[in-house]
Length: 304
Image (cartoon, rainbow, N blue to C red; front, top):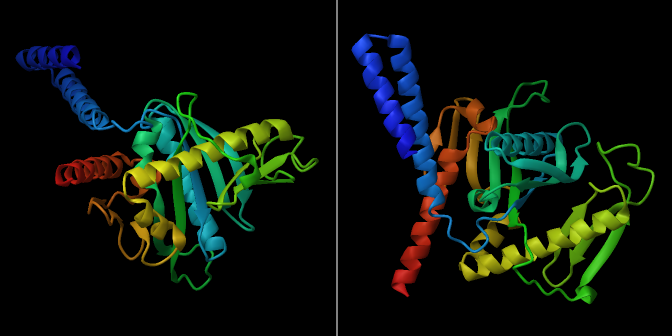
């Protein structure tokens, strides 16, 4: 970045001397890009958690409200997928349950890339949408809720012991896009960790064996995330946020009617560019939440 900065300044000076407005604007764009990269690098320096560098599982679940909430959950899935691809992360669908008329009831995606979990971990919680419903003939405003849960992929360096007798295994027929094998055999696998009531499901593989193996990885990730929450002393707050996908538990509001605004209720960061956010422009929200989270952790350590 230092070298790019030097080159950019030199280009700007040459363009200014020659009166080349086109080259000068190119230099300005280059310098703005370097500024954005530097800001992101500064935030990444805060990613010091033991699992921050890992890949992440992101799970979306629709709240009460039928088609409206299912559609909102589908919009969130698209939003995070676009954010991931914009940052050159790989996105893999691990489980997907379609809504009856639109959107999704629940889905889990694997987001792979450097610091994926570190960036996404602050997105866990309930997200609220206010809009004129496209499914309401009376064109009334509707409020919908969906929850996001993020867990780190647990690598071999992290040991998670799970008693097999504590885990219930269910198999069922996979649904949704996935090839000719879908809906013909009970290849999908659902695991329930009874002591914590943690449930994971996988249907992406072509066989029950593949899905079972991946589901166990997902379960280890979820249980490890629970342990991280305890260590950070925020487990109760997050549990309360996930208890009810509805009023009083949301972390962010997306208002499309009667005005345009997305506001994070934890950091007070807001923007009127609602379409940009829904297209995956989430860095400002993630950065503010990350900085606040690190600040709280440092403050707690100082108090201790």
